[in-house]
Structures are given as C-alpha cells and as structure tokens.
Image (tube, rainbow, N blue to C red; front, side):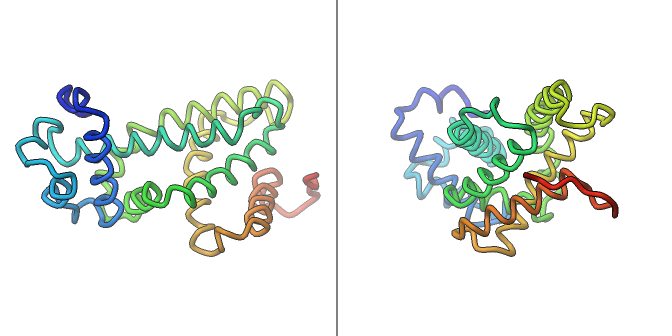
Length: 212
C-alpha cells in the first residue's frame, strides 16, 4: 500500500501519479515497466516517488486494487437488483457485465491481461493471494443462497465450486475478447447463453434441461 505521504497529497496530484502508472502498466508487461517513465509522465522526482511508495511493486499492487474497486463498483451498478435473479440468470449477467467492464476500461483490462500471460508467475500468485479470497467469498455466498433456494445441487462442494467460478469468470471473458467482437451485443448475449448452457447442464451426454 502507498505510504501516508501519498494519501496526504492533493487529489489532482494523486490522480496524475496513478494515471501515469496505469498508462505504464497497461503499455508493458510488469518486468518491462519503468519507474523513470512513470515519474516523468507524472512530473515528480524519483525521491518523491519513494516518499509515496516503497517500490514499483507497491505502486503496481495499488493500481490492481484500484482496478478491482472500479470493477466492483461497475458490477454493483449493473446488478442493483441481483437478489431478484435466479442463480444462473445472475451468472449470465455477471459474465456479460465482465465483458462490458473489459470493453469500457481497456487500460485496467490490459494490465490484467499482462498479469495472466504467464510471464511472471510469482507476481501473479502474489496478486491472486490478495484478491482471490474476496472473489471466492462472493461466489460462496451466492452458492449458499442458491442452495437454500433449491436452484443448485446441494451436494456440490461450495468452496471448490466458488474457486472454479473465480477462475472461470476471468478466463471466459478473455476467451470472448480473443474470439469475438466485443462491440456486438447480440454476439455477447449468444455467447453468455452458450456458456450458461454448459454451466447448467454440464458436458455429459444425456437428457438436458433447456434454459428458458
């Protein structure tokens, strides 16, 4: 986390530093990013940088936190009445909202893509150790409620399923952007329905429940 001296700055200066960092981390994989380019773009000295952050990773993790907060606010706005949705309908809306967030926040999304590209597994594991518990807990709560409402199989391992949904929610959005046009709304809806069919019915051959 940033040092208190960073939080004591005027809002405009804090925003300038974070914008410079976001631009840099979105333009290059982490190992190729440069503190010198960030401080030049933010118009601060290197000495000032180390008064605000311990090192580059400290700033990077703060930017990741900012991206996560922005995504949670975005999802909250998109799913204000999520309690009214059946579990699989909610999953559908979450995946669609994830696609929309990636489209509307391209710099945050590019930072996330670099994190997932396998070029720095130790950093990825460190970031995941911080962020995964929140996502897992979110899905666990949804699953527990869905079990109570008899919308999902009560015999599932909720913690394992939540863990899988966390990974699935990340990879499925990336797959969509690699293979489809993110501006095509009909394609997004069709993709979400296909994804949901698999989630609800599995891949074993046999009688399937048709999603309404």
